[in-house]
Image (cartoon, rainbow, N blue to C red; front, side, top):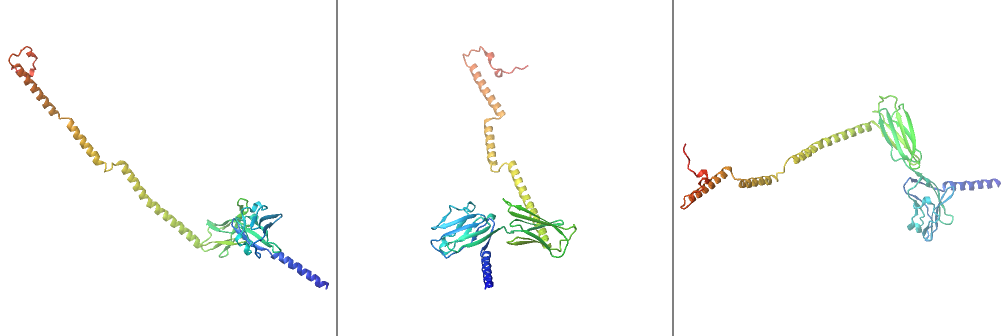
Length: 330
């Protein structure tokens, strides 16, 4: 009888412990993204909902009563980042949505909807491995990945057995040093090590995911081919630009040193008109001399007629122009 009682008590205790251990809903959220913590109940138009974070102290996240949020006791850390799906509360959805999730949000949450139907959610925050980079330089192959949480693990593998040593460095980054950067290098003692027939794999693992980068002979050939193609394209572009630049330069030089053809007729016409006008205004020297001779001849004739007229006083004949006197033979 006593033995049966002891066994029964042990069974109750084990069942209770199993409920505490396995009753929480585990949710993994991504750093700086939105996340939903599920909670459901029977549904009511007069529902009373309360969310809190169970840490060293009771942290009030959000309360809902009388069809509206009650934020007077909301913790500053969750202000503006926590909300309910109000249009679905009457259907029994009391889930909590967190935005811009931070690492400080990790912990155990309680969703109270009245009665004994409380729900517990265990929240973890991860910054998963997003990209793994692998590259080769001389006798060294380097693998790296950044912005990971929690601290990751990096492993190497090769397509066939070979001897090498690796050095791995883990550094913390981010505003508060929560994120991890990892970098590992494999160094081969023989500088003439043949990489062409080998495949090297680098895997970065964390609790939420893992990613692998592979370096092989094909990768090396593709890298060389891409570099050659890029070089050819660059040379072609440069060769194509040279004639264009030269043509533009020659065109500018020609424009700066030549007179537009549309101006030439105007200039020539103006020059011709000016010359014609000047020709009309400036008589020829012979024409001027001829006109002067004509004037003198007419003047002399008039004076001779006056002298030969009857009753004319000959006093002052010596004042006549010598050109009018008869020439004297010597």
